[in-house]
Length: 158
Image (cartoon, rainbow, N blue to C red; front, side):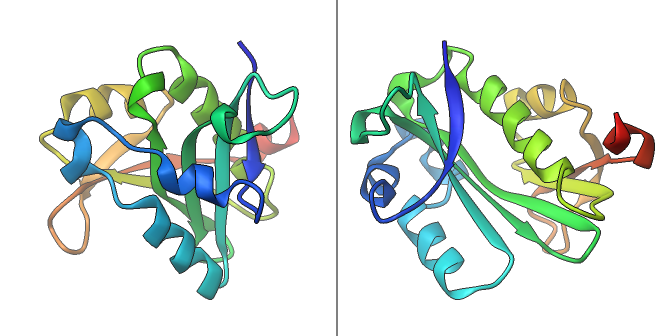
């Protein structure tokens, strides 16, 4: 299965906005349309459409969404990550997160990548831990678990 990340543009933003998760996940995932508005009006925000089997990028090939924010010159936070309910449990999220992490690690000077998730979501904890994210405690609002990957210079040069 081919999965790739593409910048969110005029040609695919509607498909990204139309993505949805299952009802039981709704409280765990922010609205993609709101995320696109945030990214449009703030610097350092990067949005990516997750595309499956992308010979040609068309609406029905967009299956998920990422947004990350460069918080400082050395730290990136993944703020949004979702796969549409119709495409979950197919390995798309795992491939997409690998691609996103590679793209983030390629950014100059980045040595820390963080992600937050609901602490009552054991699936998220195990999923992110399998990529090397290590829990460091609750976020500043004491609502979400914060997990971090430290990127060392040896990893970047390989």
